[in-house]
Length: 528
Image 1 (cartoon, rainbow, N blue to C red):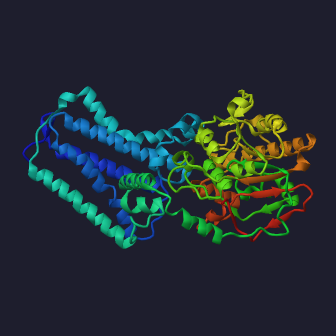
Image 2 (tube, helix red, strand yellow; image 1 turned 90 degrees about the horizontal axis):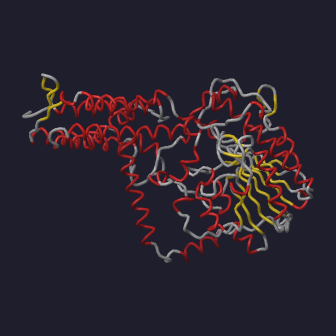
Image 3 (cartoon, rainbow, N blue to C red; image 1 turned 45 degrees about the vertical axis):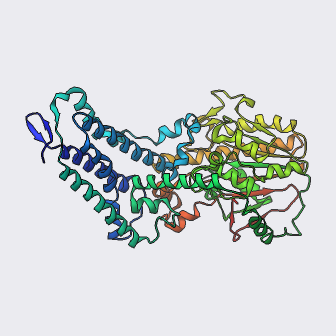
């Protein structure tokens, strides 16, 4: 090598600085794969792919430092190391709750960040500083001993060899990935599969490509396929069941989205006490579907709303509430408007959260009762916002003001991660697995159950109950697969992939006053 970096009185080739940065980031990424992500490895080839897949990207990005002169080189390495570490760290934090990897559309959901509050802080650990240890060390050297670093140029031969090695590793990685998962990049349906085979950083490059492709398709779209879609919809039409059609005609529709409520809590106990005593009784006089699966993706509650109001699947990347808020939908509120119903959504949160104020207009909602429509105080709020008991109590007045018949959707908040609830509001004690998320989940579910009990009684007291159909459903999971060990302890069984899938079930309860209850055990259902 013709040049290098001198540290103190000893020559330290600049390639070694870059090599050091590559090695540390490579090791850091692999450790994250094994400790922070639940990437399933089935054989040695998959382990080898997982080991090498970050390397080519790191060599390409940091290798450009070989073309820089003097102190610009170390600045480039330090800044690049920080950005790469930040990308890795952001994925780790996102994965801790969503069990998924970041996508470009998610990054544009910045309006949600100010409302995340304690949810984000609960996902952070003191040890997370280790993700930036290399950056901190290099930054300290730059700040306090910059004279220790002297730089020289590098030969074209060494630069060429470095990048040829990066290219060779990239092709070797892709070749192995193709033998392990043929057509990986042309038949993408699983982000974990992409990360496992091409790496976190290359996955993000591919995700940018997909987003650009999607945007181009949207810009160039025309109406040429509408006729085919219409023909398909008409051919797929299924007539309603004669014995059920119209049994609740003209009644108010009260829809309650139960935040993070999974079906396993129904008829279950913790510490010898029922988790959902009211719902356990309520389902006896309702149509109860206990084999009903949520289908949300990265949009979580907003995806659930989209599914319920439109009978359309959400996006696999990002939240449709952000990416397609300018679309016009043939949604349930709009259709009900056309049939004489007044439509409203009630949620004691910022109206812009999940872009609801814009999306609800696209759905046809006539009124959105949001944060300004509620009296929220420190004593009646926790975590993400207003406690469910107070939310329902204040919402009764809004219901009484609506012209009948109406379609009113209620979105609860208390049973939201990180499941915070003061002792004065707890009807049951937390579980004692030692896993904070699992342990605190049960008191917040129990609180929501009590809130719904009070709400139903209030509907009866106000003379609303008899003229209404009441639908309750869990919007998505509350306890992710990252907590399977603690869940296994609670369930008394190993959480196998089959059990994990069953845990994705959420309750669906349809209550029509005067109708006998029925449980649908074998009939599988989905949010759509």
